[in-house]
Length: 207
Image 1: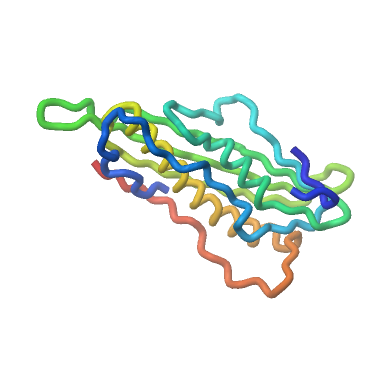
Image 2: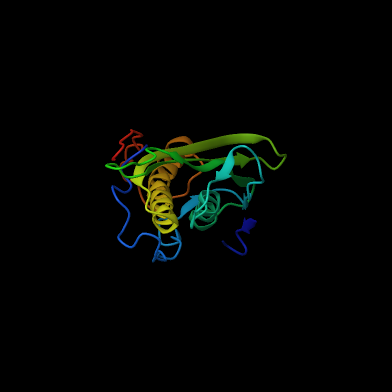
């Protein structure tokens, strides 16, 4: 998808236990959107947001109500805005993986658990009119959690929440990296506020 100026376009805790109800149908919220966030205005004529194709770096282990790759693409479309007259930008999802594996198989005195891992990496490139890459910025986030497995519904809820939290992290990291690495290409109407610190990636497993 191409956006033109003339027609605009770690791991932290996730769940200690799934909600009550076991295999009951999960009550999930609509997918998050990003258009309400501060636009990132690039001094280029247009921005191409590329849909990732199949490959080893794009993986979603079901059940997964939210696709990490689709959410990353949506973030690129809704946050990046071209405001220039020359050159072009390109947004790519380099990797988007939501994987799961059995934690504890469960037994007489223990509950079955599952370990979720999320990794998303995106890149923005600025290209000259002749196609040369003149600048780029990358943002990456990782999360993991061990959750109680009470059936398909609880597994879906856990996957939904880790993707939402990961995308919250990615939004912060994405803006931080663009303001740090593409500052000469970002257009702002007022002096920039102090930059937030990068997202810290640390592991915390909650049984």
